[in-house]
Image (cartoon, rainbow, N blue to C red; front, side):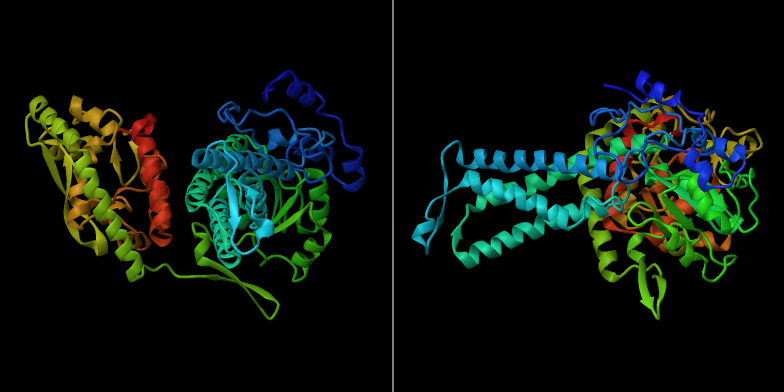
Length: 562
């Protein structure tokens, strides 16, 4: 297997530095700009065969990619004449082949499980001429129909792969819709298809498809973190809007957008976007030349205030259909997809952003899940509760549980429960410790990596979040939820800006986005952003994902847990 640092990759990289005649002919740019021209072997659209791609790790080796993501300037120095791979088509073909393998395994495996190796028959009551149709042929037809349904739902479309849950939703909808159609067709044609066979094949096939797609996503994300298998984006707009969008895209490389340059109204060559290493490729009238120089396949317009009225249309007209794409990136962040709707009105693509709200049904559903899950957690973890309680009692002086006033839903205070992980007079020591140099936390949240108040057993409990298990009783009592914003102290709330109080629109959670996104290493602004993003974009599926990530973070906490 050839890795990204193999002799083959090094040989290809050794060819960098040869100026592209095509780029020189199509763009009047300085020699420094040509030297800073980013290229990637993984982002151009059709032109080579679907599997003419550079060596990559196998599906089972998502962690084999280098951990260091090259900067925009380093990527810019790659040779523009280096052959590029139609990565979107290649990745879709990989999904197609793996989907076919998974479905064949699931459907024929179900047939063998249900019928054995015999030549089971589908009987058609009304037409004796079709009295014997082998299940082997029926299973083959089911696999092909399933593949067709997945294609019809665009489940392999590059717009949905790599991030979000749309890909998984389309896989599930295509599968359920197909089996619903088969059930209706069998009823109308009076075909006796074994119900057990279908009832096993559907959930097994969907589960295996989702697992397969998840594994491919981990493989894709591993490469996107180093700038591969991503759209090459040229940002166009004001300097401020370009900087904002660039920061968001750089913060989440797994989304698959690698910024290779920018064009601003007053842009000058050899400049960079403030706070980033993204090169400025000229002003907004140099978009065509910038595309040629950078090899960008996506143009993202970050703002239109400083652009001529017809400029966006002119940009769209100059792009090559199917190979280059136009994206309008409004300067609003942390808005979930279901809240955004595009509605064309009088030729204007108006973007409607729904205000966040919790319906009665949503509140009932969340509360039901909280009650059932927390009750099950208390029952299942009761031996661990007893062990931790005895350990805390025997290893340090003081009560087993620590009760602390926190601020919850609508700003109401409540008493939060935790296993005591500090000495009894920990609160009295806080003022003195807060004056010392801290190596964790932020300007509002007090954290220390080696807090002297923490007991030896408390250090272990805090690392694996075991001290927070009694909060399940807070969930049962209704003052907390399983997932939600971090429950703040009253002293912290006193420092809140007005907009931060929006986090009180939801119950605080035992875990949340802050818990699975860095914990003590987060800045205050990042903590607030995550909490407000959760409050305004809540979904049950999102809660399930956070709970799963919490389990992973608790078992492998890393250096951010203390």
